[in-house]
Image (cartoon, rainbow, N blue to C red):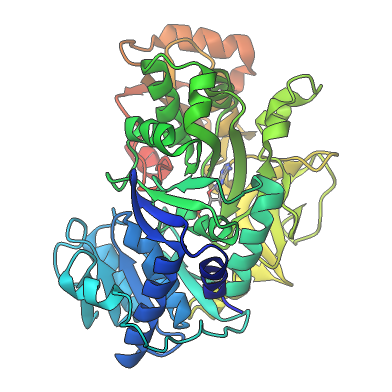
Length: 508
Ligand code: AMP
């Protein structure tokens, strides 16, 4: 069984229901989607592609993205979705590493030919139309590829905030398990639901096409092809409440949009059923504000490319349980292990640590990658005895809630004491006028390292350093407070909205 069988099943169950939308407009029913993906798979096989071959997808969010993904899986091919905002040189490197002979691109992101790719097809070209056209009546279409569960489906290049990106091999089993548990741990889905793809389809948002197809729900690709909060709210009013995946920076923009439009939580509920957030730390102050402005429509997930979207989840109910004695700690956590995985916190030797102790987060289960693409050394270093070493540092509490501390490389050691930037950031974010912060360590002759805070003010405010210092002194140990403040207009972020601390460290 392969992921393509999910599409075949929906094409049989509800052939005529609209499945894919381009903004407000219907694009394809389940029947059309399956017919196009099956026809594409037939043509790709006729052109010589073999199961297991890699095909690059380097395009902005586009309704055809879903037809392409499922067409590749129908033929047993491996999709290599690449973030549309990468530099062409980075994409060339990925295409070469994946040895992808074919690529589907869009003109706005691929400005020239990709190195090493022999067939490059613009998704809006007549060539793409021909490849995706439904076959003539009477044509016998191929059955979906009968994949072994360990057959690769998606080669996912890590965002590479450090060093060269590595290709994470995600199998049909990995994505099937991720998809099935979505309904248990994240949010039940039914055919009336609609998933909105504003965040890149090449990343977590695209992975969530799997559970939404499993449930026969609708898929909405905004016409802007990206994150436009006004458009997202409007599409929700048009289609009925949508589900979307949002990095914390996108959540912040949605909250600002709701405030700018003067919307009440009941209005937000008309546009959004569920906003799944994750991919980077969400500060307690930010999720509190999001809940106040938009109501209980948030669920947090913690995952990484190596175990896609599936490590822990903090459910809507947990976020809403304000009367729970440990609610404040819980909303600053990433929640509890998702159903198909075991999660532990371990010491440097991989031995499990008791509740309350800080160590590396390890994960075991059917969502853990098959390995890094043609990189057995990196695989052996990262997956040991079946346990994925995430590189994230965290603490489990007695109830199984995991709180992430900073990655070990982000830890600041000042005068021999460990300082977790996240803790300082959480405090600074509760100071008036502060919109965003990032804390890093700067080398210091006396202390080894000192804490430096980069601060972005709310629109129209200019953060006052003396007031920030007083705020920190009132709330945390003296040694943890920033010795220096740098006020910025915006924090440097990568294409997925993660703050680039490496860049900030270089500045200090
Ligand atoms: P990527 O593989 O590019 O998706 O990055 C995964 C990394 O993002 C994880 O290892 C974490 O460091 C971070 N991350 C993902 N989800 C969360 C979350 N909910 N809270 C904090 N950090 C997260």
